[in-house]
Length: 492
Ligand code: NAP
Ligand code: MG
Image: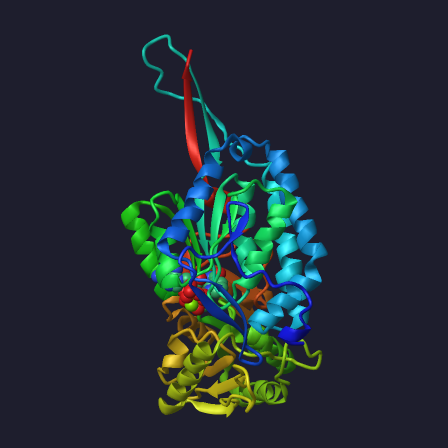
């Protein structure tokens, strides 16, 4: 399927204050089908004035009684209705995501749509379960006066949500579902490469009955629209998922403005195979950890640590998986790996592979572009048998590029895994519980998986140690991120 076969209307305007709108100055930018390189749409390039209009609408909606004083059960019902609409329009949303992002249609259905529905329903339930506490005070003054003291969780206010292009719909829902459950209003800026499903999501939210201005989508460039959103004085809270580089810029701005901020950033996640692990299981597990979503996953298992005696066998097994992976359009059911998101991103990934080779890494499989139109790259396995300090071991590639390294003692593997500025995810592969738990104890990562990788759930907190971020999404933890504590003290 390509653009001509996509029979639904593609919405290409911003959604602000309950209406579709162009940018005030009429400027637009192109979005592409990464499997062919063809332009599929032009979307508005938001200016500072457009950002101001969206934040003003969100502020007005936040201050209005219609949203703020809405009973929690009514907010819950709206989120459940949105989940139903996403489910009902699942085929359309999945096809739109595959057209715009390039991922396999099955994953668009299961993860982008299915995941979004799960998250919306889980977070809908939180709307009615946000609670404070009562507190007995000790400093009763003046004598004879008593106090009734309590805490309430109140919505943080207007939320600016900025998301990347790897899971466009799901990342948007990870932000908006808890923010709306808590009673915040939202201005969402999707990545410039992948704005289409976010626009459609806002339209569905409007159809579900969210009041105008509660959920707005602005399309634009990070350095202009994104930056204007972050520094806008009427934004109370910024929630960002993206690169560590941009996370630092946003973190600095929010520190100076004293705005609340959550940062979900990059990763360089280690996969540690222990010597009792069945080699075939290690091969399948490690290949899945890096090649899933074409390696464009913040927790992609990009550093593989193998027992020296098993190094060649497992590396060759993964190389074989890489060589036999069928590249193609995400709409083709024979395809096992789609394209990278953009020509620019492919140039970055191929540059990092070339640097890995130049610095002494051995390219065991892949390295090429699959010799086809679109932004493809072959799944790539680099053996680093001498444990050289390659740039591709240190820096995030965000593509299907694995570097394998041998180790002698498990402690050595754990130390190597931790010798990274990142700390987002990690996995250990073994059948021996005590050895697994020792690695879990030792690895510095926000999530450690045992005999699995990349598994996430709305109930399980997710986020980074070190330069992989600040704060946790999902579960109970996310409610704190979108609320403030208000202490109330009544004398009697
Ligand atoms: P990115 O370049 O950091 O961009 C992310 C978002 O920020 C985009 O919407 C981008 O807009 C915007 N942006 C860029 N510069 C900005 C600025 N100065 N001020 C405000 N906003 C700005 O990241 P990406 O390339 O889209 O995504 C890949 C990165 O995301 C990887 O590092 C990956 O690890 C990380 N990621 C992390 C998680 C997690 O949960 N920890 C999940 C997924 C991805 P434009 O699109 O216009 O540039
Ligand atoms: Mg970008």
